[in-house]
Length: 322
Image 1 (tube, one colour):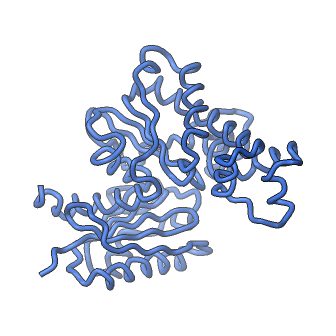
Image 2 (cartoon, one colour; image 1 turned 90 degrees about the vertical axis):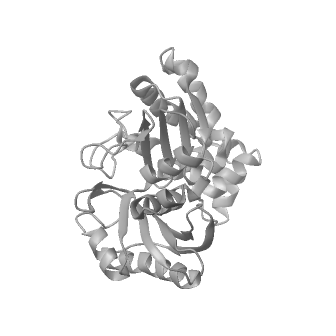
């Protein structure tokens, strides 16, 4: 009889990723859904559709489902208390999904769960103190201190995207202004590239926009890798702003490693080296001298795999396999 499995789901601002994994964290099936999410009902149906597709393809016993969402979640109730980019605030998410699926459901912050898998198996493996930032539509994060994942009093710890780094900065969806998320996320990248290509009329980025192509983070990253000046300039600007946020975290927490994940990490050193430069200039010794700033091992799948690991831990399957 095939070994039982769990399903991990990463719910982002633009897409839903789901997979089934066994106790060894081997992925067997994946499902992808785009999630414009005009309402909570539509989003719940979209998430359920991805889970059902994976469950039916697996044809194995399903032990549990882990779901990561970009929200501050009260772990006592499984209810998102604040969600900036999705219509889930106040929805009894964990109970609704468990009732529909008929198996235990474990819900956590998506970036915190990405941190879980990166610390257990990835870029932060073996270090006692680490910070992770996930860069996509917004900026999420997670903390590991003394070898343990930090959840906070009610599960809302680890929100580096909402550190204020510019008191006169752009308004944020959280209601504040000048949050790191407004200056260094995929959303910020889209805003800054418009100014960059306007200043460089002869760039490939400007020509792509003039031809009617949709300017996405992936396209800016591709053009930056190809050497386009406007694309490289905007990527360096985002990287420097990211470095400001990381410098604050380094001063506050003295981590051994800062892991950068999410879709924007595809830019690689074009993003990370400007960030490292700012950290060397702005963070205090000795913290700045020991910290490593590295890309996530699991890339865009870290949230999905972390959610699966969360379900494995919660269902006891991981302990049984150890």
